[in-house]
Length: 546
Image 1 (cartoon, one colour):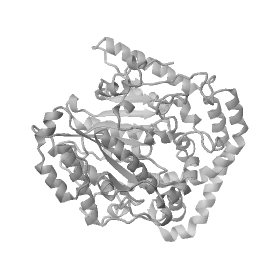
Image 2 (cartoon, one colour; image 1 turned 90 degrees about the vertical axis):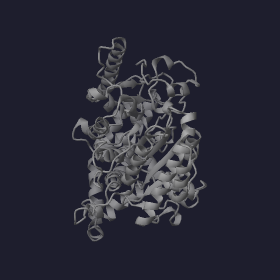
Image 3 (cartoon, rainbow, N blue to C red; image 1 turned 60 degrees about the vertical axis):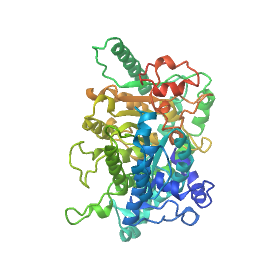
């Protein structure tokens, strides 16, 4: 989703929060949704502010503990019985303790119950994120998955107002903000005007990159790397003694002649709109850069609040609601392991800026046998980590996720697998909104071009296909075969539910292994019914590179 589309949806989303047609069952919300506000504090997402604006009611410390206990109790009950009913902590604990653990072992002896934790990205209001969760809970339940949604305040409007009127030097300062907001706004406008020539350049560059008859140097290099990695992967398959230095790949880089928007007419249309795009790009730059900074700040506050950071005595630091939930999930997972116990598979799925939150959680992981502390709460042993259109930098994602995987020291059968999903490289620059009037490019492209200009290539967004392939050789040898890269096709007449713009990922069946696992080469011509078979097949990837 682009900032232009988010600006258009901001007002509609606010009004929708007051008159949403989605049923928000408080019991279901309690069992499946953890919502935090702009300060990272747990809130009641069902307490709707007036007309969708304002703050939701914050939980007291006792209420937060009760909500967390209710969710953990519901997960425990699900692990033993498969029943997904929101219960109060006491009744959930009784149901779990009285359940016959052998019933699950008898019916599915080698398949523990599966929990999927989803963290959404930026440009989401509290109300919109809750509505999406309520839409997805039932389909996920039908697939035998227990969903947990981490909802955080990342709306465009609230982020921009924090930047202009509330936050200075990384902390809330209402007095300084009241005195300086006109200067902050003026500085944003002047910076955006000064960057207008670069906006024009990026528009011209994007217009050419999305045509079917032109490829930039990076696009050509990406295809060369993909072919080389495919060749190496094939050699490794034939000769087990030869170790492949690349992760598994599932890449579709083919461009067909009838793809809409790729012909000469589209190029003429894009060139005619270069100046309008530049003017609107100035407006988006004014609101977008500061908003991005505040959203990034909130990803940090979800892990540690300002009050906790400013603790004056050792031991005063408290664990924030999000890492606290993950720590208790880790405890429950440990308790459910062993002979005669049902086990618990936990998958972590994140989108866009949600990957920044996940990286923060994974970077504080403690070794499996180390002592847990409030500063470093233990993380669960994730079976699958899925990053969709990762908005963090290449270097940070590598440090955090690879570091977590190396620290687990699990046997191969229990080792974590990391799936990295991206749009087609042409789709990344072709995304547009407002009927083509807004500047082209996905959110990741805008971040690298405008909102957080990267000082080096390794500081660019990790979720772009170009960067995924450029950094494929950086996968540690110990993790080869457990890191997977998958991209989706460029827009065509037959999308088959594949993401073609940045915001599509959070609306897809992201919990389904058929969606995030790479497809075997032999299945490329299989019919629609082959998806379910691929979900249980080994995730080797042998796909033709066009």
